[in-house]
Amino acid sequence: MTVVRHALVTGGSSGIGKSVAQRLGTAGHTVTICGRDGERLRTAAKELADQGVPVTALTADVSDPQQVRDLVAQAVAANGPIGILVNNAGRSGGGKTSELTDELWRDVLRTNLDSVFYVTREVLARGGIREVGQGRVINIASTAGKQGVLLAAPYSASKHGVVGFTKAVGKELAPEGITVNAVCPGYVETPMAVRVRQGYAHAWETTEAEVLTAFEAKIPLGRYSTPDEVASMVEYLTTEGAASITAQALNVCGGLGNF
Image 1 (cartoon, one colour):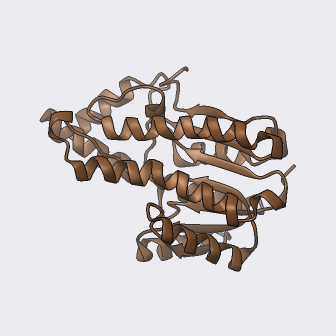
Image 2 (cartoon, one colour; image 1 turned 60 degrees about the vertical axis):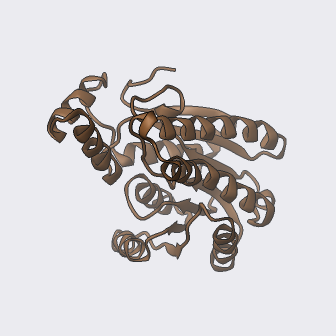
Image 3 (cartoon, one colour; image 1 turned 180 degrees about the horizontal axis):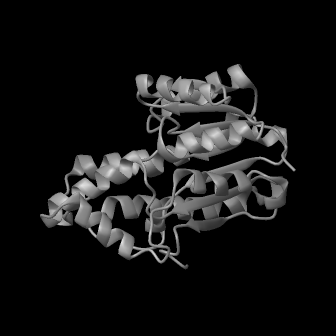
């Protein structure tokens, strides 16, 4: 059974975020998506509307605390108290550790970890999630949040932080009936995945096709997961049947990680 709520999905203009918006909207929830690129966001909103899933699209950089405050206020004004928060916004980033710049390190941590804190804090303080009942916070982490990934120290560090934040806040909010979980995708075919393969191809002086073959060989199912498969797990965590699942980090990875 689905309790209809207002869902805020960050990073909703493509990939996993757009699939989550589609799943939650189809399930009957009111959906607000946000992203930094207004044009991409409007395109995503039109595509979703054409599929019968109208969404409210708000431009915001969730690594900026002031923009987060404005985002949550606008979302609540448009669609009422937030009952589901999906912290999906993120970026890749890495390279040889000795060659990483301060700017890259800080931007990956700001985008992937600080944003999860900023948006969660604001939704708890002023987004109304405490009042709606059976609130859900779902953070998109990664199997990189449970193991180190070669040439991806900033990304791995940020996603480990998301997993730790999830477990701590999940315990904190459990007495209020608000569940907090992380979904940990492995390799998922998204625009970011293409950029990651390009980065490894450059670092290893090989082709993107060879990188893809090497990555697929590590996955027991032999293929990348799809954004919709990740979104399916997110949708499940919003249902009444998932009410006793909290402070967990759940893999959607084709068997890549079994921890």
